[in-house]
Amino acid sequence: MNNPTHPDWHRLFNAALNGTLTDAERPQLAALLKSSPEARRLWFLYHDNECGLSELKIATAVTATRHVMPSPGDVSAPRKTSPWLQWRAVTAAAAGLSIGLFGASVVYGIAAHRGAEKRTPLPVFAPGFEDVQMPLTAGFPAGAGRWSSDAAQVVVAENGVQAKQGRFMLRMEPVAKNPLRIFQVLDLRTLQPDAGSESREIEISAAFATGAAESSVRYMIRGFAVTEAPEDLDAAWFDRRDESIASVAKGLDALPGANGWQTLGVSIQVPRAARSLVLFFGVRTPDRAARTVPHYLDDVRVSLVTSGPMP
Amino acid sequence: MTAVLLHTPGVPPDQVQTDHPAPLTPERQEEFVRLLNGTHAMLLRYVLSLVANRHDAEDVLQRASVLMWKRFGTFESGTDFVAWATTIAFYEVKNFQRVTGRSRLDFDDDLMQTLAAERAQHVLRWSPRMEALEVCVEKLDPAQRKLVEKIYTQGIAVGEVARQQGRAPQTIYNQLNFIRRALTECVERRMAGAAP
Image 1 (cartoon, rainbow over the protein chains, first blue to last red):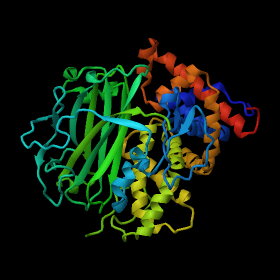
Image 2 (cartoon, rainbow over the protein chains, first blue to last red):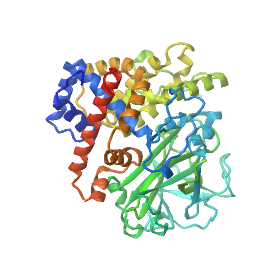
Image 3 (cartoon, chains in turn yellow, orange):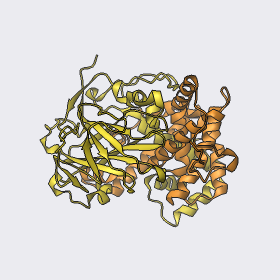
Image 4 (cartoon, rainbow over the protein chains, first blue to last red):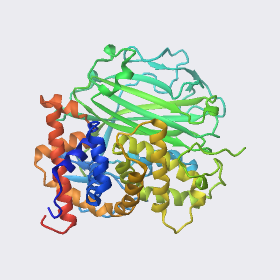
């Protein structure tokens, strides 16, 4: 190495990235970074690598490779092809920003461009909310095959919003609670074991709309893979969500004036040990005065993604 | 509608904008999307080095992106978008830490200012470092690559990896720490033009 560094630097930087800095180490790290330009440069490199490792697609088997088209606006430098690594495109969708006319097409582009893959829909209870008599429990759902919510109701077109698909949609009631939440638990025990793979990729998407487009709103999808069976997840589980073995979260900020349905999609690698996948759809309204406005959810889709034949 | 101030107490008064700026033309909207697309990876690296937590960094950048959109009318085409965007992102980092009361680091204002100023320059050359990282990852042994894939690509928690392998979580952390250090030193060597 050209610039020898003290082993403690690496220990402190790793602890910071692991979230395991002790009360004694925090001031040590701050003092080090204050005093040493070389330490700051290494600190920056650690964080470059941390981002880079998340953006590299590391293929450990030929069948795991996928082709991802870069977005037209991606100015990343051209890269050499590698048998091990493929660039995972980072697009505006990664910023999770929905801007008026660009709206859904920008945000959903990430998934839509992934070609050589097969998507098998997984059974979701009432994905389009087409049953007006659909039971809707409060709080966290007791088992699979049902929706639960803080406050919601199946409705027809209203407030200038028509169902994304079918005739009905779910209205997430304007309550003071922030964010508004709706849950469903999928039972993963029904999936065929995927021989030779320790995890399975599952995509989740949903369409959101607002009853009034004058305020900013953040739509969210979260997915949590857990080892417990759906019937073993109790009402307090959401408070223990950090115990999940894999999770994903994505938000989409719809700016004032972003009318119409905004489709948001996420992907999660679900370890084979997972027996349940908790789906969470949420709406957060930063402006308290705007929390009297209903929001709508429709067209929930969950798919198992498997690699197709290589071209 | 009545103009209201943005809820961004961390932003200096001279940068506060109204919540309802003049509408952008379609061309300016396209310009914004193009610029944000092209710099997103860079901005995420910038923010991450100030908060040291990936999830927090993504959250901050998302908030900052909304502010950039609202203020894009003040950005002059052809000037330095990265400088403009990192300034907004920096104040959003401080705002985030104050509002959430969440900081895993004891960085005071002076240190934050120093890091932000130096990082804004350092991050401009992230792309060659990324290419060096690709080469360095290929030099890891298969078991190390497998661990990187689980943690970073599949997003599996360290505790779950430990359970799968029948090992203590600290063992996995130790392996991860070793890999990070090895990759960092490898990237440094490659960037310095030294031995591969």
